[in-house]
Length: 502
Image (cartoon, rainbow, N blue to C red; front, side, top):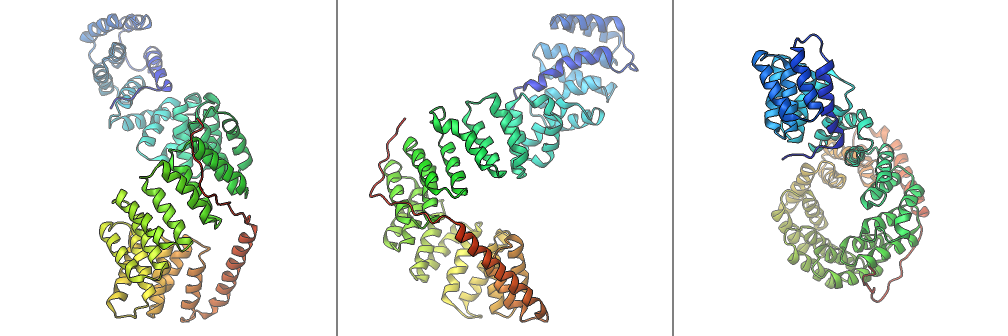
């Protein structure tokens, strides 16, 4: 795949030409042919420069400057492969000849060739301050999803990428992936300055400001888009503004913004889903159902909307409608396991463990690489309370172990496995998984509680008082956080009227 050269790479051609005249005085060359070819290149008479270098090379076939100038001529005639061969010949006779390295690296970079990184590494070893080489190397690393390495090279290339929105965006994305939101925000701010009408650039800047703890500044960044219609076709801006408002405990504003997003983008499922999540978090289940009803009039075959509505139906104990939504979602998208999982959870809440277990068994059979299904199966089996030694107990243990193996960062799976080991008297294993869960989530009260029970059965009972203090502190912090939360209930409407305002 050929890559269009960004502006920062286009400076290489002039640099190569200049270096051919003034760099590397220790390399011998015929002055007159080099000067003649250089004059032709300055006039962009690439054909004449090619004729001159070919004639000169017949008498000086090992001269790296002549090979490099011939490469520049071939490059000017849009013959990259011939140019690459010329630069490679120059490097054969002078491996550290910088103009030839630059020329070869530029061509290989543009072609996405496998040799490009090695050439750029060689070039940077000789010229650590070469910003253009840093920029190209950073972009290659970004394309290979090697952001931690790319960040330093982007930073070293700021002088040449500062006016390049694409390269700056890639730099910002790498910083976001490293969760360096404070560093990413000014990078995206510079991108937005260059193209203030681009909604994606505005979103990126505001998102990083918000994640860096600058909520009011993020809202100011979004406000021009929210006030006008310049970004009317981008629901993400409204949704981000809603997220920011909710994080600052301004739920009424979040609701207002999501309603605007839905009214202006009735065919986009994402605002409906975000509204449903907000409704769930504030125990306003009927309001969420009402909005999803409206969404399903617009998008009747969207399986995700059906799953979301089914989850809300479960919360109001309307299991018949919940099952109907889950079954519809599974029919619309048989590869989507969330509908099966949600239906199984609904059956568990109905205390229909047998049906839930069958549903989860089907799920893990259909999706054997998904940890969540095994977690749900183990939890459903736990509801039956089968004692150690029974087939169901063995199945529960194996399901929990499988969940941990598939996703070692799933704290709930470690919690469940710790409880199983605690029941069977395998105290050391229980403690190990409690500690694993707490390493993932230090505020995991269930893991801490199980750790206290397990520690009491060991010779380390002296640690229990400190663990109890820690548990009390977690409970107190959770209560304080709950008291800070705005007690806001969304008003349920009989039917949301959704129409496009565009």
